[in-house]
Figure 1 (cartoon, rainbow, N blue to C red):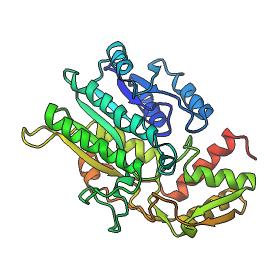
Figure 2 (cartoon, rainbow, N blue to C red):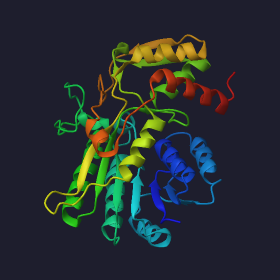
Figure 3 (spheres, rainbow, N blue to C red):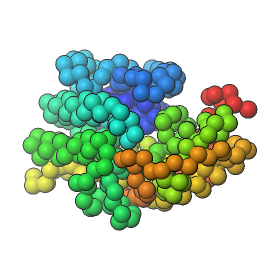
Figure 4 (cartoon, rainbow, N blue to C red):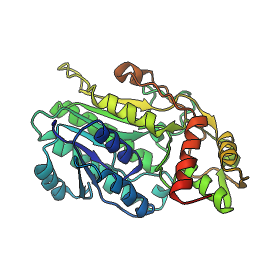
Length: 329
């Protein structure tokens, strides 16, 4: 049996699916999560229960921002040669209400992961979550990793860009391989309740008003969870090499390479549910962007990443899960 892989945020949406795929492939996984109440904890506990059915899965409840506890955890359950770091305080809108949560989890938490990796002999690869939010108000489409990203328009985006910069510094100083992944609007079964697909589906099912920002004039590169996980794990197995000159680190996009009209997305949900939405059009929210669209050719070159799931396949799979989980007829 190979050494365990550490997955942070294992009870979260992407972390759960990543840990599950690793376990299904026979890997040993240590998953950590603080199970905070940013959204309904019961869905996190339900994800965790599925992971705990695997004998090769070990769960540790811990906050990555707790420096000493992280060192103890690493020494007890590791050391880890590979880390998939997905724990973070997510959400652009919530960062307007609780900025301190973002600095604690996304900046201090990321630093603690870097410090643990730094002191691990033979460390192989840290893959961590960044976000398409780092592109800010960029109007050049599609978004390329070559684009400038020095004008964030939300604190969430600023913390994710901070992670990329810290990782560059640590890769330069301590020469361990790192890859940051800029995720583009991930959706699918077991998704986060604060994400658009979940919010829209819940509102339509319950006959509530459906808030749609910027009067619906928005586009998103919606990326299905299975494609995301395939990309994460392919990247994990292809760390950047240390040529002795450049820092052994990189940042890559993971998206679906197609920008969908938000209202087309809403209409697809209506069709799958067989119900009409009671839409409440609202102005653009602070910190939000009008359109996202990923250029992933570097990710394809590095790891053979090729998304295969359209919204016309992915949305019905989410709706099917939602109906079963919430017992909706």
